[in-house]
Length: 441
View 1 (cartoon, rainbow, N blue to C red):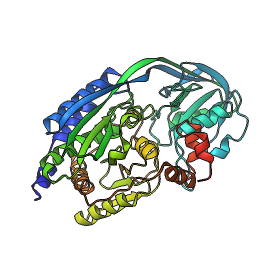
View 2 (cartoon, one colour):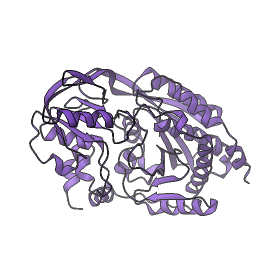
View 3 (cartoon, rainbow, N blue to C red):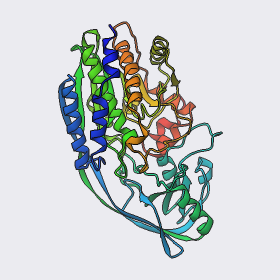
View 4 (cartoon, helix red, strand yellow):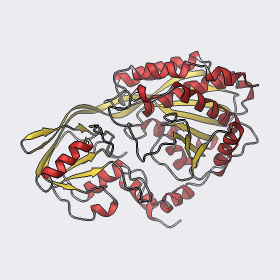
């Protein structure tokens, strides 16, 4: 039966929910707006036919933006504080480290204000996360950190700092646009500049939203997204669309519930943008051996071709190929590890087969994401519907009893991180014990 395809291709439930999310003023982790988004998602999942819908609250280290400044040459230069930056001021010599590759930090940066790009060169073999650049600057003695967007358009980038052990960062950190960054380099490199951040720091509460469809089986498949967004924009692409996808998938699978041979649990996580707090909370209390797979929607449906990190799980790659062939629709696969979204705590801790569903883009990095330009007008309802059809069929396939997905030992995941030159960086930002990042496996 294909009636569900027609219903999904004409559905408005996901897009309606996306509009509801982006119209919330502020979905920052731990905020009232984030909770409003969670309640709205609980209501949406209930309305489309999911059951056992509930909120699961947990404590986080809260951070609320106040103001920031980069002062140089007797004037203020436009910036935004990076979430979980300490509320501090630092003055030092401005040092431009370009792309901020690991070798760029192999110098004494004591007391300096380090400026780095938000991207890496095309020839470099891996993407370097913002937090890795930040903590390389900290370890080299820097007093402040300036994160320059590589996308033009007067858009300062955001993104959190901090580690799981020390949620608030070590030095004040701000984001600046390409244009402000170039001005700072041209006029003030090797001169004294000041970075200043004020913020409210304290305890807060976030929450995950749970719902299920399908049979009451021992195993289950997790289908996830994250609810929170940075407070400077609507968070339409990152990750309102991912949560809209979860709602659309729940609606489609509710129509196909009799076909499911494994329970599907939907989880919209809170507090992803400040350290995967919601998914870490869930992974810490779940029986990981009973999770057949985790399918994470973060950055999905920004463009029409789905791009999927498979983390080297052959069964997941095979399933994607089957769906692409069945619908004669391209799906690009990336076999590498991607440790910076909500699937990762399950992959690392329990070797759970994990897919991170995104969209194929022509540029490297986040594009409009993590800037004020992350708005609804960049997205299309058609793309949500098309992607929902593909992912629905994928989930039904993964839920079949004869679809075998093997868990892998943690040592295999860490070995893959080492081969991909990612283990050292994860250890630096506190996401992997140093003894595991360096040992031979």
